[in-house]
Length: 126
Image (cartoon, rainbow, N blue to C red; front, side, top):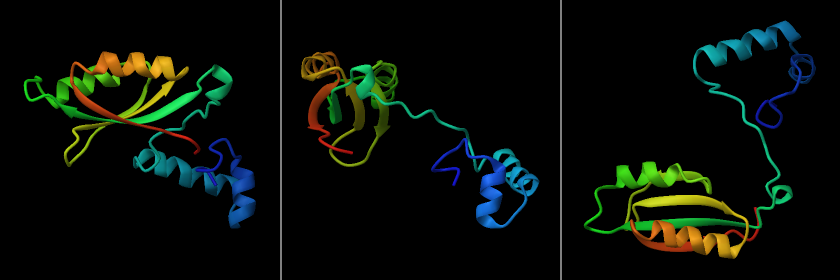
């Protein structure tokens, strides 16, 4: 239930699973203390903020590039990037990016082209 709504009350969770609110609170705190629950996230409607284009972009590093770690750090810091992972296979990085429109996406691709060759897949529907 917390995965669906992290703000759900312990009382409501308790009713659903047959435990008291204090028992649920104790279990949640224990999971937080043990690192099972690492945090709580905010869900944002990006379309209402003007984000029209979302894309997965894979990057194959240039041989002369200084290294994937350096590129990963710099690319991850870019405001358009929501996620940047080092991956196995022919590609080195997989980037999830959010963009105002396709022109914004093109500008982003031009900025990261210094690190290597990209392949872009625009997300049509989640």
